[in-house]
Length: 143
Image (cartoon, rainbow, N blue to C red; front, side):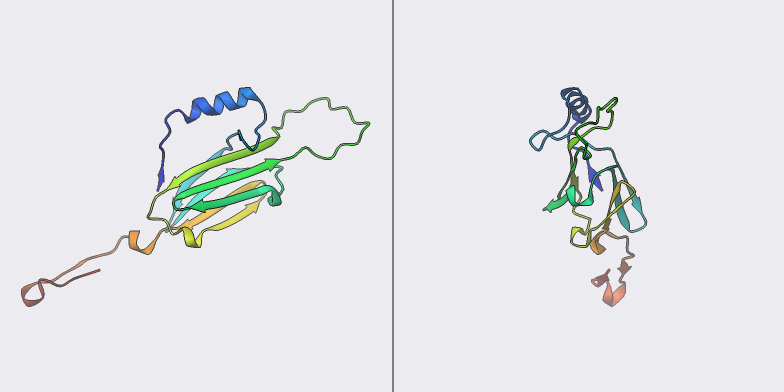
């Protein structure tokens, strides 16, 4: 259901990590899982520490775009940071979805730092048995 079109995506990810935190013009990638669960396609993105208000999910035709921003926590002026390993900045992922997915009924949930999108498989794409006519009704094929 997911179509991969960029064989150099991993090289881009490594280059972005070396370049520093993501910005709106050059966002960092976010880890994800994608799988089919019955008649639903599920895509999960790891976004720990991201405020749900800082997440955008957009679909245009069959292009799904997820953007999120992890902002620094509010710090008092007298705080001296000793260690900062959690990446901040903007994260983004674009996926080309197959035409067999019903994006009109996409559901998005955010729980414990994971954004989960559930996209139903379109009725026209589900498996169905075709009735084969015979004799007088041989021209009649129904779905």
